[in-house]
Amino acid sequence: MAEKRKRIPRYSKVQVNGYEYYKTDVEDADGKRIILYGKTREEVYKKEMAALEQIDSATFRRKSPTVAEYCEKWLLMQSVHVRATTLTDYTSKVRRHIIGELGEKRMAEVTLDDIQLALVPVSKKSASVYKSVVILYKSIFRAAKESHAIDMNPTIYLKAKGGGVPQEERQALTDEQVERLLDAIRGLPPYVFVMLGLYAGLRREEILALQWDSVYLDTEAPYLTVRRAWHTEHNRPVVSTTLKTKAARRDVPIPRCLVDCLRKAKETSISEYVVADSTGQPLSYSQFQRVWKYVTVRSTKPHSYYKYVNGQCIKTTVTPTPGSHQKNNPELVYVIDFDVTPHQLRHTYITNLLYAGVDPKTVQYLAGYQGISDILLDIECLF
Image 1: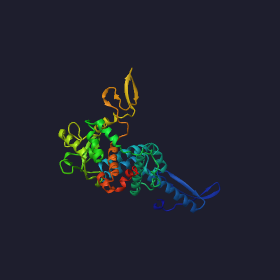
Image 2: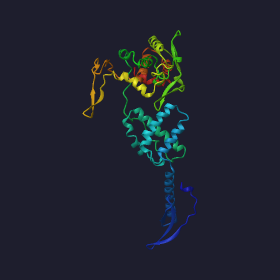
Image 3: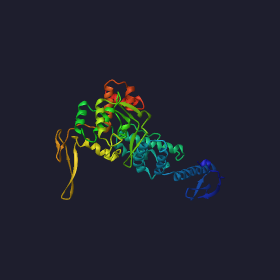
């Protein structure tokens, strides 16, 4: 940077304690005059160049945007070419884990140590969250370097490997667990959702966007077609034709048990959506959570509840025994003594396809995977 400054050297001689020195001066970023001395012109020149380099660096850092400013700009740039759900995920992680930790620092002042310290809280989260935050750090600082907002990229040696809490291996539900799950929620709001996950392998966002015009029950080989995806913005449902990948657009044959389930649901449906709220609208995020709670409340995992005793809020935790009934609702039976999540339904569908000997290329298509490599984890769970 200092080489770019065009100035005529101004050296004068001075006497200090009986010794003769060469002298010059420079002006720092704040306009303050700095005096430099040397025994020779060459020594003064080197000191001058070093001082100008430091002054230019300080000026550049001062002009550099803050992490918060650049991150918001980066998110705005991403909004042009990423899906709304992806942008929502980026925004949440960037604001919480990057802006929340380093937002006030200047981009040009951030070091690798700063970033690694900021990642300490993230390391207590899942390995997948840790990896995604590291990727965001690298993407943001790489973009800043390419746009000349910073001179050096501090993330070039940043690694995601080994960070975060390792996630437990996903286990597909056994036939006996599937039967117990379906018996526990038969006739309840999540039943159709669970059936679609288990027997069509749809993702959550595909199930909640599924409309009856995409379900073909009266053909010789019944099937449904995936053409829409669901996400929420500020808890409001948004259904669009923009899918996760091109491969997500597919036709899925459905077995007789799912055909019967959907036929029965369609008879009483007041909505164009297969899974809808009481007014026929697609579910919001909080509404889906309430629907899924019909599953979790029947679990034998420890349950905590709160009640007020003498004005104090007392937390009580109970661990139900399998087959027992909820005290305040005798019709609710604790029968689910295994882990079950919405994604496990899809994982179970894919696992069953593989167990049945369906070739990987067909599994890739039916599951809506972009490539065969995406099902490697599912294959590894089997062998």
